[in-house]
Image (cartoon, rainbow, N blue to C red):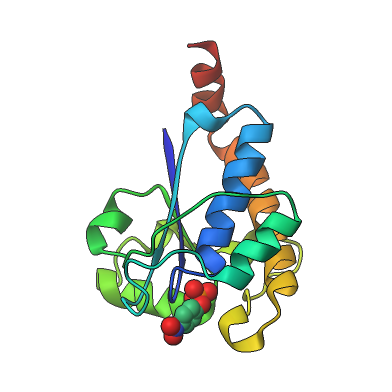
Length: 161
Ligand code: 4NP
């Protein structure tokens, strides 16, 4: 099982969008059995809250539905994840602060896997949920290609059993 944890600041906009987008990509490939996918926030600002309505609406416009309840990231979550995929440089610094600089080898910016590495700007501030959706979709698709290569043997094994 490959565990992927998407991380942003509030865990009500970008990271739950990434969680649901990536779940759909994985489902479409018939690979749900190989992945454990969730999301967390570096802050507790929105703890217990659902996906922000504009984020949910944007996902639904693109045929993606689902729910998530905001939870703050812990060091244990990082230890238990194979990949911690953050949205921007500020998230990256916050996660490394949480881990005391450890586990850097599994913490990546989501869009670092794309041909145009960049931050996913926070739509909570920009109000541009479509841009967040397209950056996250690009990042998720490129990350999936990477992980299919990196973990090919394990995924092929899961498919046989
Ligand atoms: P997110 O956006 O990190 O993409 O979930 C935010 C949501 C809420 C807050 C900040 C960012 N907030 O300050 O409550």
